Length: 307
Image (cartoon, rainbow, N blue to C red; front, side, top):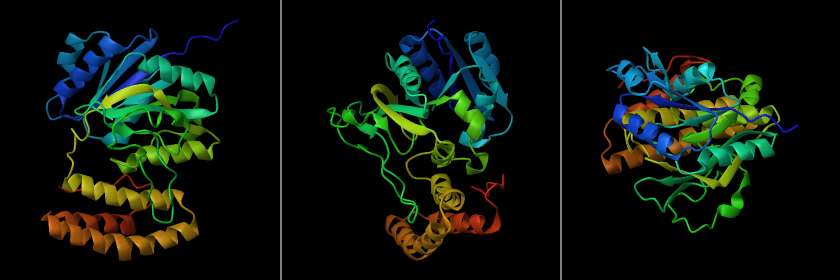
């Protein structure tokens, strides 16, 4: 007897970007050929609630309204809890689907039962022949550094052979096995923004799962629509969560080395760069990121961000 067809829940989170989200919904409608899907949209505390209008416009889609902005992890977790799929496809609302995307990722998870998460190849929407993601290198837990393979390179198929295991999935598009979530738990919401998908991948790996890349699947990403290339918000959470990620996932020796590296190499280097670029206020955000990690435990729900 053939195996039952797996149901896919497509989950996305909206925050004050209703038109961007509607563009994604249109893309899914036009490009998704996988029959057994449900679409879940979580509005993450937008200033103006778009859900009532959406429910009339898109009656077949499941909309959920959160009165508070719970961050990337929190918004996706709301969708995860409501999802009925065997596989959950978490996508940023600023992405665009391509033909065969969902089917290809489903086939990857079906063929590799040991895989918890699979991400597709990601290209930049505004420069559609340029790669954003073709997998990640392994994390150096002494410095909390790794690299996104292929980023900013023209895609001539030079990385297509990398289909297989990778160090981390990409948060803009990752299809996750529901069984793996039950074992490892949902994303950690205290990250709020950035690094949560890397922490999640480490949680899956600790349970014996692998992380996979499928270069035959493609999605386009409108990078930084929600935050901006350079912002105090991004600078705060990137630094705060880089430290938090180490606290949660690195060994004692690795953590100790990292603390000295961050304080005596990363911090002065960043401050000099802020001054050179005239990024007023960024130094304050860096010190606040460090202070948060000195103040709160690794499970604290306090984000500590004040614009």
